[in-house]
Amino acid sequence: MNFLRKLWIFIKRGFVINFSYKTYAILGIASMLIGVLRFGFMATFLEEGNTFPMLAPYGGDLMAFLITGTMYMSYVSVALDSFKNSIRSEQTMGTLEYLLMSNTPLWQLLIFNGINSFIWTTMNVGVIFLFLVLIFNIQMTVNITLSLFILILSIICISGIGLMSAGVIMITKMGDPISWVFSTLSGLLSGVLYPISILPVWLRSISYFLPPTYALSALRKSLLTGATFVDVKNEIIVLIIMSLLTIPLGLLLFRFGFNKARETGSLIEY
Image 1 (cartoon, one colour):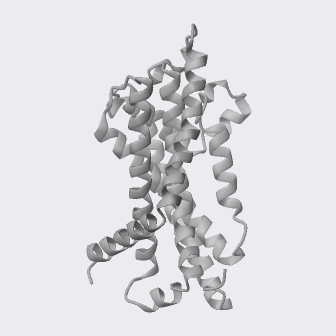
Image 2: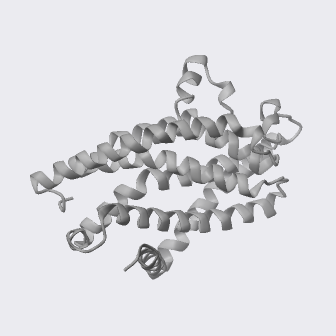
Image 3: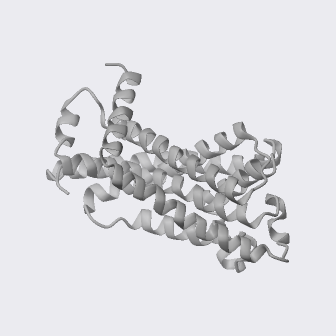
C-alpha cells in the first residue's frame, strides 16, 4: 500500500470518526465561534472613537488583529498536540500495537494524523473566519499564497516541539511540561491579543525565542495588508532557522521516549 493511499485512508477515517459524533463536532465549532465572537464585539467596543497606532503595520484594524491571533492559535494547538494525541488515541483504542506490527511505520502514523488534524482545523477555522469577516465587515488585502506558505512553515517549526512533547508523554504518560510551557508563553508573549511592543523589555526578549511571534507578524501582514515575500523575509528566515533546530531536536527526543517506553514495556500503556 503506497504512502498516498495510506494517507487517504487515515484522512477518511478521521472524517468518519469526527462526523460519527455530530453533536460533539457541532458544539466544538460553536464553542470556538462564540469565543472568537467575544473578541469581535470587544474590538467593536474599543474601536469606537479610538485609533491604534501600534497596529498600523498590520492594517490598523483591532478586530482583524484579535481574530487572526485567536484563529492562528488553533493551528499552534494542532502542531503541538496532534502527535501525542494520535499516540494516546491509538493506545486507548488498543490499536497502537497492531499498527506497529503492520507495514505502517510510526512516523507515517504521526504524519497521517497530523495532516488529518490540519485539514479538520482548516475547515473549522475557514468557516468561522469567513463568518466573522462577513459579520464584522473586516477589510482584508490577502496574499493567499504567501499566507499559506507562512502557515505551513510555522506548523512545521512548531511540530518539532510537538515531537518533543510526544517523546516526553510516552515516558510520563500524564503531564507534559514542554507543551504546557510553550503554549502558555506563546499565548502570553507572542502577540496573540496585543502587539509585543507593549511588553516590558525583559518579557519581549523572551518572545523573540517563540516561533508564533514571527509567524503571527508575517501572517497578519500577508493576510491583512497584502504583504509580499520581501516584506516578511526576516520573519520567514527566522522561522526556517528555528525549524532547522526544532525538527532534529524533536526527532531525537521522540526517538528517546519511544525507545525508553519500548524497553520498559510501557509503550501501549496510558
